[in-house]
Figure 1 (tube, one colour):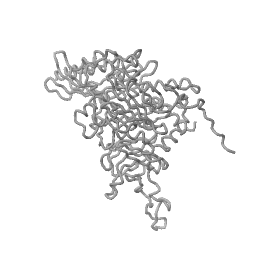
Figure 2 (spheres, rainbow over the protein chains, first blue to last red):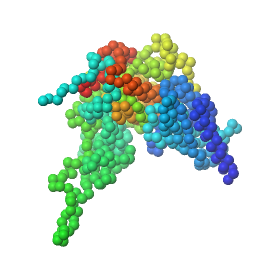
Figure 3 (tube, chains in turn green, red):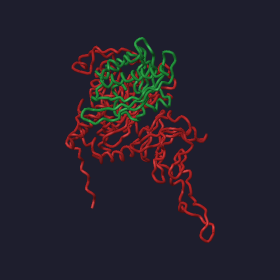
Figure 4 (cartoon, chains in turn red, orange):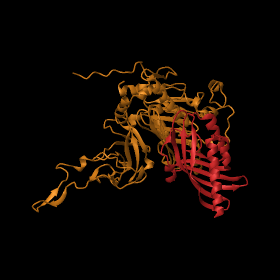
Length: 158
Length: 441
């Protein structure tokens, strides 16, 4: 029981640090939450439920994530905005040795300069987490979002 | 006495200055729905592959009207002449209920939940409860019938609104108009070869959807894909990696009315060329991908066709962007393929629905590649995300000024002819020349 609680706490801490990095706009830190060949996917629930493979964002390595960071900071023209992630406690689904499958619910709010905050993207993380000498890392994070419409654009990672 | 003739508010001549009210006037927008989306035009509804089996349906839209795209039963004797694809309005003939709420599924018939009116897949009314009344006994104990539909009520007069349907190489179009010309005439002979290049004789596979709501007038999206000027300026990836920029061999094609268009180009190696990169802040000379699989382009045999405007010679574009007025964009950008459906939501917003597809004979590797390159496109795309943003900012600019303002579309002059280069806004002008005629402004 204690081990289980400890693991839960560790994953919650990982998620809290992940959310803080994004909301504090430390985008260069973001790929470091993943393994080198880690995957990051943002996918509409509609596609996920129907097993259609298309994703909104589908990155297959830390390298691709760095390319995304370059894109959001240097190349994709967009109106500026803040994000605020609110996460649920993680639910540990399976633990097999050093590999853990878990999920957590998220709501991301968007605030544009001079405007009110709005609900931006709502869904769940479906994660595969690996214990490494450097701590827990994401082997894959799939953000399955319920929101049927992207509010114009989605620039920063979820 | 005759009603006063409406005076045109369009003050300039030609179509190179588009007044802001063309994007912001709610009454004009209502007339656009009537004359364009519900008038003598064909609107995109979906892909045949989305409804593979009898009874399969999905919701779609023509203008703001929700419709059902469904595959009907076809009698064996009609299989050669009837594709079985129907498009009916999602509105019960009884009390106007938008009865179908599941976005996709499979049905034997459609039943309105309110009073159980039941429709066949082709929209015919099959039956309704208590049509012939309810048997009872009257005060004297005699058998009688209570209620029922009046004499002369015929099922056949009360079906769903059926749209005319055209299936063209797996694309489904529909129109509310009985007068609209055939789809082949509607698209015209100069646009058709570019549609056939992608679709003809090639079964599709559905890869999935992306949906975004863009707070701008629907025409801004058509303009964006009729505007070859911006991609090499707004989009770093296009100018830096040579996917679309002004030093490429390009062609702007339109139909005889100027309403549909194709932007055709062939990629180059990118990199420095002062004529098109000097002073362009989006050009990043030193940019290199950490993971080159994002842009792992592999040429496909179908890219090359006989040049429609120069028979006997071959042409091999790497990108073709089709705008089929009023509501469809078809994208081939290297290995990424999609249809993009414009669903207007008032004068100041539209939904933009991306349907990515591949071909049934794609290898697993090619499917993977198409999905990877999808990172460039859509609401989060390295390239397309900023299109939605600038459309929003355009609408904001129009709204804050009001009646007197106009956009300026005079790159390459004020004419409306096709060109063999991309340094032009001719396709935008040609669309507005047509739009002025249709709208009578």
